[in-house]
Length: 184
Image 1 (cartoon, one colour):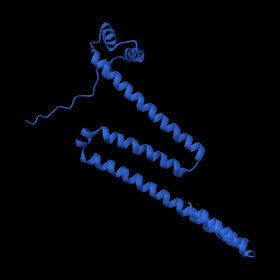
Image 2 (tube, one colour):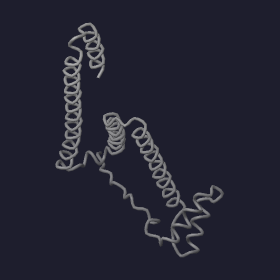
Image 3 (spheres, one colour):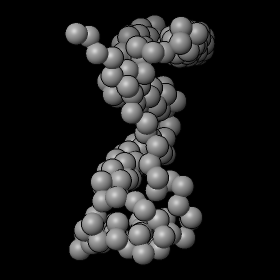
Image 4 (cartoon, helix red, strand yellow):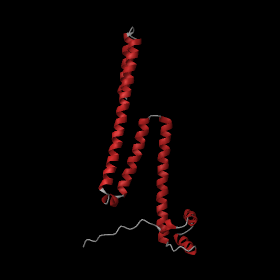
């Protein structure tokens, strides 16, 4: 007996409340002394028939959202700190890509149903977006590598010209430069 289950709506009656009532409700929810039953009764006194279960679901959704916003804020602050301290666009790009990858992984982990029902064109857009990001990253790395090599060759030519009368010093300096270049 295969029974197909309906997907329940994600809509909460509280979303349709007037803004001032919703603000008061949020204040009441932030005070843990108020029970969901008390809040439901208060809403009924105000003329809104909303159950304690609905209040509880709204509280959970609100808590999840605030937690996600706090996590995102922390990650953005860390990126800003990194940008101020490091000034290395490669590290900043890598950090941003790691955050994006974590968020995408979380999204995939929590959205099994949505992925199953995802339109093929949306899936293709998502895959294309990920591919473009990877291609952009590879392009930046290749560009930086080329710039490092150009700078190395220019430096090597300049010191060779300046130190052509001092072959021992030139040899040691080129060895130091080659060693440094190999670490990049």
